[in-house]
Every structure is written in structure tokens, then in C-alpha cells.
Amino acid sequence: MSTVEVPAEVTAYRREHRARHIGPRYRGRLHLATTTVGALTAIAIAAWQAARLAPGWLELLAIPATFVIANLGEYAGHRGPMHHRRRGLTILHERHTRQHHRFFTADAMTVESTRDFQMVLFPPVMLLFFLGALATPIGLALAWLATAAVGWLFAGTAVAYFLTYEWLHLAYHLPPDGWLGRRALVRRLRHHHTLHHDPRLMARANFNITFPIADRLFGTMADR
Image (cartoon, rainbow, N blue to C red):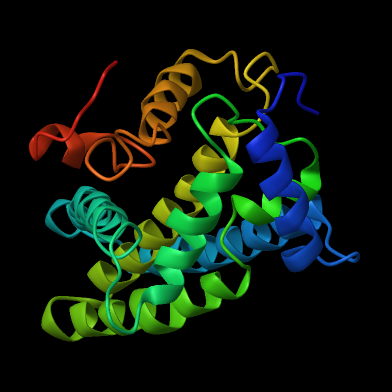
């Protein structure tokens, strides 16, 4: 899939990682489809339930509010435990800093085959964790504190943000000369993410994976 020459040290690490962590039955397209179908199903259910309750304009503000909160949460998680060891969260640091950033460097950002999706996408079980530990309990709390419509709108928007994260992150690691890679928005966001993969910047700049709102807000935006 990739036609870019990969540095020797990255090639060596990729070969080692594939041998140790990517089983022979792994299918990247199936991984992507599982996450996508699961997330879209949850979004559709939440949207149907919210529409059935005919939310007012004040309740609909839950959608942009959730988007902003999710963007801040993405930033905090990436800047924090993904790049700095935290008790009980060392698996995030291991997978992100010690694996993802060695598998993909600023000069070798592109997957070589769909099997490399394993090093970009969250494990499918992460969607179940996200639904069970975050979207559902917080949505229930909001339904109790505000209205049921607000709870459903929060849950649906939160899962939609999770799926957007997965899709965009994968897009940055697909060939830049492909149809998706040539889209203006993907090119701009890929550049933002590529700079983050520079070892000199990865622990201090460009922590947003989706839209660099929090990076701009907290002064961690690097353009070059």
C-alpha cells in the first residue's frame, strides 16, 4: 500500500511488532468494519430515541457541548497518560508512545498494508468500554439531571466523536496520494498529526487527533 521508503529502524520495529502483536487471522478491514458498524448502530439508536422525544433548542445544545467536551477529553488523554506514565494507565503509554510512535514516524506515516490498521485503530472492545463506562452512565446521569433527550443526545454525539476520531486517525496513516488523502481537510489535519510524530514535538505539541481546538486553546499548536 505504501510506496514511501521506510527508514531501516522503523522497518525493523514494524517486523518485530507484527510478529509479536498481529496474529495471522487479523483482518484490518474487518477491524474497521466492526468498529464502524458498532458505532453507527449505537448512534442510530440514540438519534432515534432523541428524535422520538422531540428535543427543544435548549436540549439540542447538548450536541455542540458534547463535541467540545470530547475534544478537550481527547486532548487531555493524549497529552497526559498516552505520553506520560500514570498509575493504572500504563497500557495507554505502552501502546501509544512506545508502540504507535515507533511504528509510525514523521517520515514514515503510511501503513504498508491493511494489517497495519492494528497499530492505528483502537481494539474493537474499546467501543464496548466507551459505551459501558462513559457514554451510557454519563447519558443516564444527564437524563436524571436534565432530560432524557439530553442524555440520548450526549450518548449519540459522544459515540459519533469516537468514530470520527477513528476514521480521521486512520486517514492520516493511509497513502497521502489516495482519493481520501488528497481531500483538503485530510491533508491539513494529516500535516498537524505528522508534526506530532516528530520526536522533538510529540510530547509537547499537536495533541488533538481530530480537530485542533484544544491545541489552539492551550497554546500547543505547532504548524511547522
